[in-house]
Image (tube, rainbow, N blue to C red):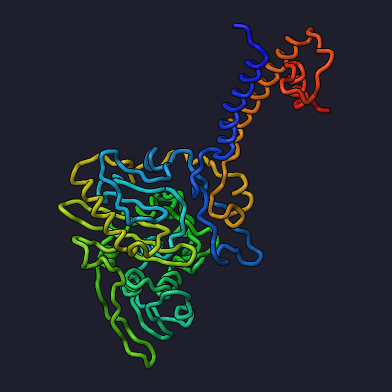
Amino acid sequence: MVLTSRRLFAVLLASLCLLAPASFTASAQPGDSCPNKTIPPAAVDTSENPKPGQQAPTPPPVPQQAAGGPRMAECGVVRPSTAPAVPADVNTGSWLVADLDSGEVLGAKDPHGRQRPASVIKVLLAIVAIDELDMTKVVEGTQEDANQQGTKVGMGPGGQYTVNQLLLALLMHSGNDAAHALAVQLGGVEKTVAKMNALAKKLGAQDTHVATPSGLDGPGMMTSAYDMAVFYREAMKKPDFAKAVATKQIDWPGYGTKPGFKVSNDNRLLGRYAGFLGGKTGFTDDARHTYIGGAEQKGRKLVVVLLRGEQQPVRITDQASKLLTWGFDVAAKKIDGVGTLDAPPADAATTTSPDAQASGITGVGQGSGPIDNNRGFLPTAAMSIAAITILGFLIWRIRLRYARRPVPAAVHPAAPDLDQTVQLDRIDRLFRDD
């Protein structure tokens, strides 16, 4: 079939139409990056600002292979194809449900998405304290303990508290004063933070960077639903932790002239949800609502983690209970899971955006996450080269075909049916430098 000028022109337009969307798609979604693959959403306050003279920390490297299996790299809802639908009331940024004994992940949403933990990171502090401190040791409270920001249990200067009481206050009432007192016993805040980060690395938690012992926001503070499930699973192996999170009420010592008082567990699911084992709540302006907890039913123990949530359409604890119930349903049907808590990646080579590495946590994005420019550039460049090649070839064929044809003696520019040679000449001029 001989191609007429109109057919060649149609081929030209069709080629551009086919290539342009592919090129734009590659540019718009380079590397198909998950929004919080490298860093959490942007802070709403100054918590990410480093202290004068200090630099913002670099985000932990993103492994080439996600811990827990390929599906743990997905940032949408991850569930078995035969599992029931996830409860519609659950709308947190990230969540995960897993079996505490086997480590099987039953379902998740953006499990490795990096979020701020708030007070659920106290689970990691509790592990360090249990491993290193004598639970019977008596600690004297200080004014510095009492001056801590956020939730406090009620420590005061001169008060006498055992390490075990501090652990209970840390986990039952999220006491930041108790967190500070424990950090002092562990060698100071900076050393405690270093110990928490070292333990996270030892446990294979590669999304976690601890900035404060209590969970208050700080430069580079982050974790993931996957990592928090790993921490809770490790903590529940320790009797002191399991007992503390399951304790409903304790007597708290007074100090000076102030009498002692009762301290109750602030976890709403304790005593309300069947088989609840205990857990931890959290909230900061940047982290939003966070939660971790576990339950046992019919011989199965599950952990649930929720990060970056809101108290709507139902409370975060109610969202947790709905996910636990969903998880027990999946477990009862013996449906295969979507990953495991037992498989940290062997290769932790970074795929972190160079921009993120250069500028630190505070210098990248506005909650949209980094763009993997190297992955996105290749398809875009290939499409562009292909488009230019095809376009040049078609123009060359058109000009060659009509190079020997005489131009009509007179063609009025306003004529309704312009000569094909004039049409092609106008098209040709669109692609000339002059």
